[in-house]
Length: 266
Image 1 (tube, rainbow, N blue to C red):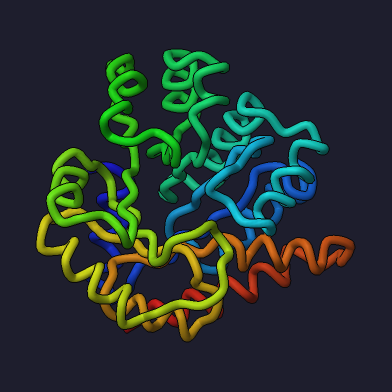
Image 2 (tube, rainbow, N blue to C red):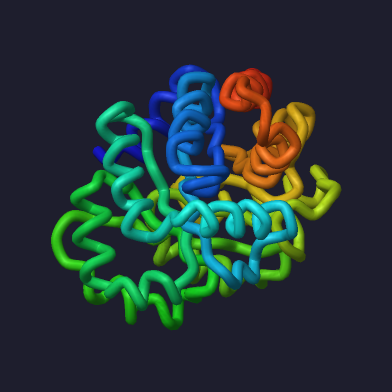
C-alpha cells in the first residue's frame, strides 16, 4: 500500500478525516519553512501539500501569490523543493507529501527529470492545476517505474459525465474544489459543497478531499462530516504573513494546526 492509502485507512479506522495542509516551500525562507512544516506535521497535518512557488500562479488568490513572491525572493526553486521533500521524508517517513505546481516549471525542469528526482526524494503525488485530463498524458506518459499519482481536481461547475471521467482516471485521492474563483476566496457554502461531495463519492472509491474557502475549525468540521479530507492553504499562509517577524511563528502555526485537526475527529 502507498503512504496515501495507509494514511486514509488509518484515519478511517480511527473515525477521523484527513487534514491536508498546504504550505509554500521557502516561505518566508528555507529554514523557517522547514520549521513551519515540521510544526504542522507534529500538530496533526496528515497529508502535506508542498507548493512550489511560481511567478504566475493563476489559480491562487492574493495570499498565496504573496507567499510565492516571498519564496521566490528567498531563492526557492523546483530543485530546492525536491531537496526539501527529501528532508521531510527523512524526518517524517510516513507522512504523504503531495507536490503542488504549475506545468510550466515542471516542463522547464524536464518531465523525466522531475519524475525521477521527486520519486527518489520520496514524493507521494503531484497536483498540477493547469493540466487537464485531456493533456496530462504528455507528462504522465513519460513516467515509468514507481507510481507518482497525479491528483485530479473537480470543480463546482464540473458536469456529472466529466466528473465521472475524472474519477475514473484519478489516483491517490480527488481534490474537490468547493467554489469557483481562486484560493483564499471568502466564504464556504457547506450545504452546496456537501452535495457536490455526495455526487462525486457515488462515482469513486477514492478518498475525496475538499478545499478552497475553508479557514476556520467550524468550516473543517462541516466538511469533515461528508468528505474524507479537508484542504487548508490560504489560512496557513495568512498566518505566516501576519506573524512573519514573530520568533514563535512555527509555534503559532502549530497551534492553528492542532485546532483544525481536532475538528476532523468525528
